[in-house]
Image: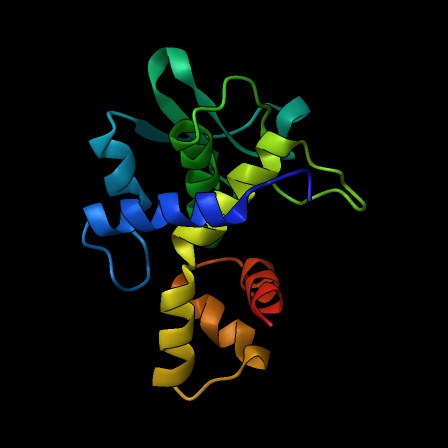
Length: 162
């Protein structure tokens, strides 16, 4: 998909999780952001940006989140924006709340999504929780709840691991 090196991205997120001693969900992305000197603010998006989940403003080192989003969406948005930062992306757009049908993501957006997925739902945690709670990949709703992530993100992650 767009030449994204998921293994390199996964290794980057594992290093971050290790550095912060994070071994179980829900991953505290605000702690990681704060440590990097990044502020997180929730705002009401202007009407023309109502479909925007969030964006990062490099000048003021702030991740802005759509105040109307659910906590699980906000968590993924922060992780996505951290992906742009940790992966040293120079140019990227805003993150939309609901992916458009048949959307073709740019390489940097695909990398940031991969980063968010790997940071919030690392494979080792997924396998650990599936085993620990005797769950299967069809239990994606329960897993999403435990990991604090959007249901669709967990379903995609579990489908990817098949």
